[in-house]
Amino acid sequence: MRKKVYYHALQPSDTTSFWRMCGTLSYIQDDEIELVDISNVREFNWSTFVDARAFILQRPFEPKHMDLIRLCRDMDIPVILDYDDHLLDVPETNPTHHQYQHFKPNVIDCLKAADEIWVSTPTIAKAYSPYNRNIHVIPNAHNDYLFPISGKLPYNINTKKAFNRGGQSHQADVLSVADDIIRVVNENQDWTFTFMGDRFTYLEQRCDDNYHILHGMTLMQYFKYIQLENPNVFFFPLVDNEFNRGKSNICWLEATYSGAAFYGNLNMPEYPEGMALSMNDFGDFDHDVLRAYNEWSWDYIKENLLLSKVNLLRLERLRANVD
Image 1 (cartoon, one colour):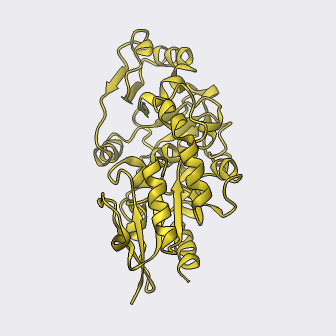
Image 2: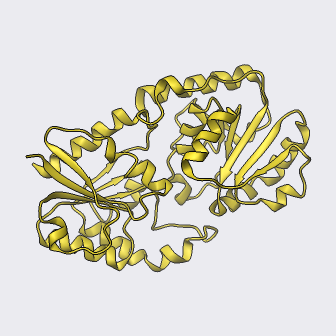
């Protein structure tokens, strides 16, 4: 009989679950370990975990999450926590700042109580290390089960499309370079600039007709859209702060698979050296350069950041916890 490891995503259908929980653990197949998704369970007691050998909980921060950890610890079930954001340092410009500031003591309690912690970046690992010594970096990775290597789009030398995606939490990031973006949009009338997600009215009011707004969509619709659109450029500005330094490079992963080159803040540690262009150079659009960056990035992803490879790290840690 295989050893059961239960996992619970707080919001199983959201983007963080796709990159860290339901969109990753469901692909692990092993002769000794069986992964069981209990994300839709809402009431927990001893009977929930009676046959569990380990439990993975994503992003706990509320008192009720700490109660769940205690329940498993009382049953001698190893508890693994998974975090993909630096929840102890959410900036005031982020809409969730007050929520996580209020629950900060609970996050720390959860970190201290866990047997093991998985995080997406070394920055988060360093920030959480005062509260737990057993922390492992498991990076976000391109899902090559759902989006196979053969489906990667080539750079399109016949189009001129730039794309930005981000919700309200990225208002401060975009506005930090707003005047530069406005200049680039207005100086490149033969390019189309599409912004998906939040409305950046400061930009809208100052840009020409090649500035387009695309309302939000479901995650799978989004992946389908960027594949159909096949943009030349993704740009994703980030303010240099500790919270953003803890972010992973999923926008770069998305950009690369859709055939685009990526512009970002290269002070962020998660962009592999030589694989992304600086926002300081945004507007220097050269098809040969952009195509080269897209191809270099894809080579790096195939070697280091495919989910089929990164999931081996997860399986290694699971085996260590159930033995």
